[in-house]
Length: 150
Image (tube, rainbow, N blue to C red; front, side):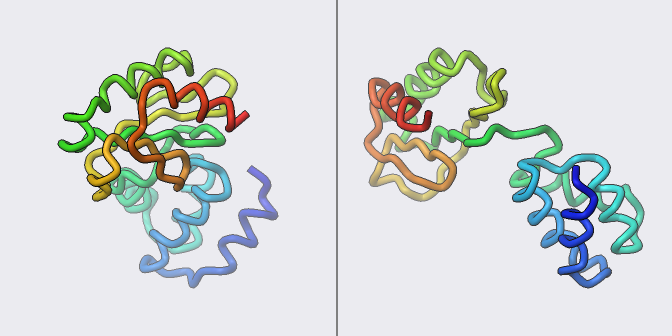
């Protein structure tokens, strides 16, 4: 992790515990996960124990301690999406990406995740690539979506 980039990131935030979530969010945006050296630096910057930083980092599902792919592909498994075939979408994504749900592809391009209802039930079944929603998705659409992301 480039120390100068990280030092600049820390300078944007007051060195208080109340800044933890904002700092961790910025670190994750910059690095696609929360590297251990960053967690140690955040703890020092905010003058809190590393255990406190870890408890925040592991409490919120939005944070990851493992590197994520360049793109995150999420398949909604809420009730409406499930009823309309979301499990088939997940199976197809796993097949095409060559990784299981919760994993990142070997080339680091994609991380595949299952999410609970995101409140877009009218669009079911739903796939989210980064923050872009793709509704009424079919397994055949998965190949097109992944090809467009190349």
